Image (cartoon, rainbow, N blue to C red; front, side, top):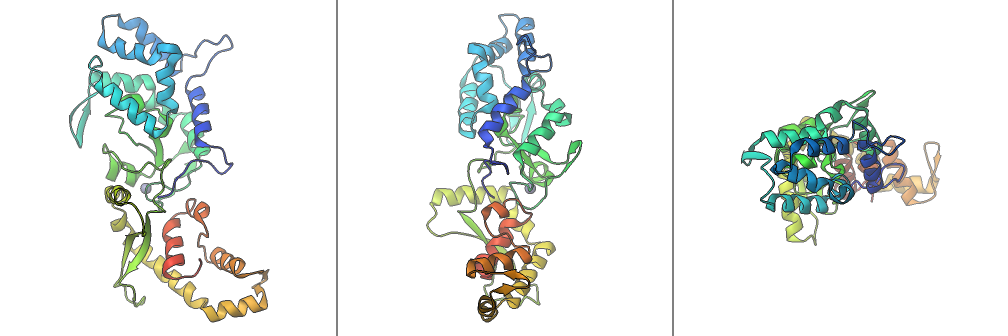
Length: 338
Ligand SMILES: [Zn+2]
């Protein structure tokens, strides 16, 4: 829902990507690559493969010019990964990684071999996956902004979604920008082997859609209202289409129309009733809310938001379960905050 490109310590994701490459390819004191590195496994395959093999053609391509392509695969941006995938698919000399049609893809033995070489299966159980989740510091699933992503040392309890499915492109199974920490529902139930439309490290849905309620005037004592997503004005039609496809893929509207969210709407309604404009004016005159001193209206709204568990800005909302939902409704629908 939001764009994630730096962690809480303001470290940029592209810098974390470089560190990730080094973690995946540790070197000994004499600069030789450790036997647990991708480069070591790649070199071994080249040595064992024989020159005539198509597989070897692919492995040599990865290792050429001091592993230039391998490095791009691990740290390249989402756009770069897309280009690499297109180039690899267009190269007739490389054997197929999968067979079958959309929604029912199956790895070929070569696809399995490449997946094993990149080491994704071992990665899930390793300290490196916890390192990655801790450094990315995405506490809530970036697709649904609803399920928490938990780290219970020594394990991470979240999934890693392959933005480009690993069955399609096993060589992207360990790419930094292709490993998105996400909840099991988004990853396994809804996305599976399909491609998503909006990459959470390069684009935000926040500027395109907002949560609202239909019908506009509702009796909150009944439950006859729907939570909807509406498109903000002035958004390009192509962006609307992409956002729609993405939201449909993860069944966001359906998932948000459950009891948990309906309760949240009622809670926000009661916050609004506790702070009508007249009460806000009184508090501004008193310059106090509880024991907290307030300087101006912005200050007042911030305190109301904080004491009512409503995120006040995007940075807060992206770190909180249901953050966008609560912020959008509090801003535009209930006008609790601005
Ligand atoms: Zn999710």
